[in-house]
Amino acid sequence: MANPVVRIHGTASIACLVCLLDPVAASGLYRDAITSLFNVSSGAFGERSTTVLPVGSFSGLWKYVVPAALKCDPGLASTAQNQKARERLDAERAGANATLRRAYGMLDPELVLDKADMLDRAAQVALGALEAGDPDTFETDLLSRLLSRLCERAPDLADDLFVRSLDFVMSANVPSPDSLQDLAKFLFTAPNLMDEPDEDQPHKNFQIGGVTVEDLTATRNSANPENIQALIEATLKLLASPTAVNRNPVVSYALAYQLMPRVRDLTPDRVAEFEKAMVDLETAIPAIAAQVQASVGAAQNPDPESGDPAIRNFWLTGQVQGAIAAGQFDRARQLLARIDDLPVRGQIAALIAFGEAAYAIENKSDQAIGMANLLKPGIKRSLLYISMISTSPNRDGALQLLPLAAKDIAPLPAEQRVRLLSALAAGLIRADTEAAFGVLNQLIAAYNDVRANPRRGRFDPASVRRTYNPRSDANSDSALILPGHRGFYEAVQGERGRHNFGLRVPGVSAFTLTAFLASSGALDPDRTAAAVLGLRDETTQSAAWVSLAALRLK
Image 1 (cartoon, one colour):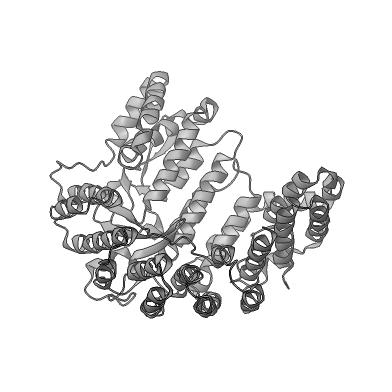
Image 2 (cartoon, rainbow, N blue to C red):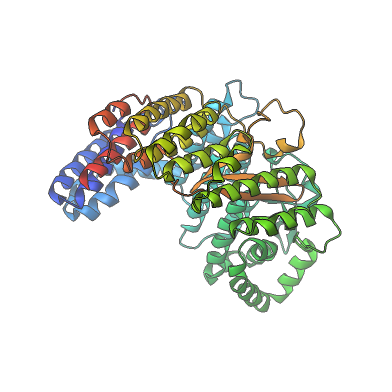
């Protein structure tokens, strides 16, 4: 590997695998990684403005290598001591906010450069700032605005960075309610600002006893429900710490009060904990609680009996989502008939059909292929074909479906092709190794396309409301779907918020090259290695070598 950051990270990754089997050999590898770590230049972390490295900073690389090395071999403690490295860590910590400002500048709307090429790198520079920063002095307000700006073009990056940001804020010895409130502005705003572009993060606040409290009563159109759930979990942790609450009891109560309706809607199993925390706060600070409630009013809470059609449609969409997840498709269609938002109703009808087809595959129904064919080309239909290939009891049946899947995958953006081709290649291993190698070569080409022309697709869930959309293909569902931690999810964007419908199918779980390689034991290792050599991105190639090493060490 030409880039030392990639090389050091890869060496440490191999050492971590080897340590379980041969601690002495692993210690030698870790020693090499530590020695190289202390000699890596700052320029290695900014080799190209569009390069995405395994970590974004010296601090991140140090944290990846040194603690794992000491766990494997405590005798490396003397090797890990280095005054220049300590000074470098301190310098990065002191300059973390400047690094964050640099990341924010990469997303400047007036920037002449093509920002599509900068998105991944900007997210990583911001991550580098988190790796080095101090939660107590970090500019979380700027971080929140960066998330809003990033979300417009790369919502998957914004989602991942948001979760990491929550972890960063909560890693403080005494987490700050103000920092958590700053991050909440990425997801919520005031009701009268709902029609303003989320990219500019419009917000409204008010003063209570000299403390600034944000109006978070309305959910932004771009808000991912999974991020709201992550914020709820972080807020519960904060409320469980009296010392954290006491840093700013006004903001702590205001945040909890405004989140309560979302807790009831998204995480009903957490309602009792939230209610107890609210009662404790109201008892401790009764005057402040009354002021917050008077100033904020009631947060939006979907109500099936509401006279507002948009709120009722939002509630019904959630009920349909639950019915699909439970396999209650007749009930889902009954609920669907009550939704009077026609674009949303059409989108959900396709999701019900997708769920039924996936259920048919799981139950070995002959109707699965016919049900899949009724869907429009795109990600949902590709997933169904891949699922049928993965679960097919015979080789011929799997190979007959391969051209159908390949045809649907080919026109999709490179980032989506990568995930689908990984799943397809993994599904073919059992049926036909030659076909699996053929798809592996397509997968390598897709990864190279991501490197050369990133972010050429556009996530635009509101596109279902437009007859003509120049930014997405109306004949595909590509613009409605984002990758998630367990595959894909489709966003249904109503007038009062968004629901994410998980797109899960039987037998499909490998959505990256590393996940495919982990299941490739039946393939010729030399041919697999030759294919990996075709990767142009060193970070991706290094991760692939680590996966192959893990496979061989089993």
